[in-house]
Length: 112
Length: 112
Image 1 (cartoon, rainbow over the protein chains, first blue to last red):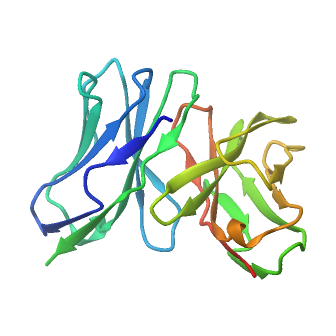
Image 2: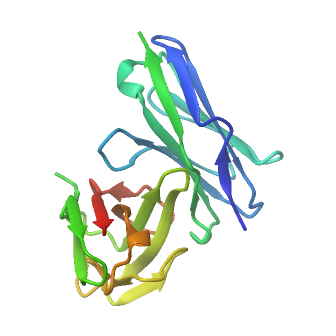
């Protein structure tokens, strides 16, 4: 079946460094991609999204890169802060919202 | 404040005893959905609703029911809960299916 997976289940970075969280997807019809952040004891929170007609999108301290050729997307967090410690999920869907699939998540730990 | 409210936050019940988890959103969103989150499996969609009186199965609908009589409410019903339904449940709403979703705080359900 279709899947969205993450390359690493955990990631530790020093405070102030940049973080890169990777995600691979298998459905070539995927058209919409989204990143969520989930802090302990809370529901997922939207970070940024991107559609397949783009290869890069920037938000506040975050950038999502999409490589459709190898079915890979990444989330880059600039100047990582302690408040960025959380589990990060990628998800994908086709243009009609079908086959909406979440990955298992990457736990980001920010070291002082 | 824009929010999705789930109740209860925690619930312990016995096998076979019917229960309902409520979900309400105040953003006038048309699209609502229920997910369960299990370790290593990420978020899996149980049911979704495109609008009032319009519901459909997600990836793991067995053992669950939903209803959408009003736009703001989308309760999740377990007619006869079983231990394999022990999980963390999230309700979410969005303007439409392929857009940023707002999640509730989660309901941790234990079925013994």
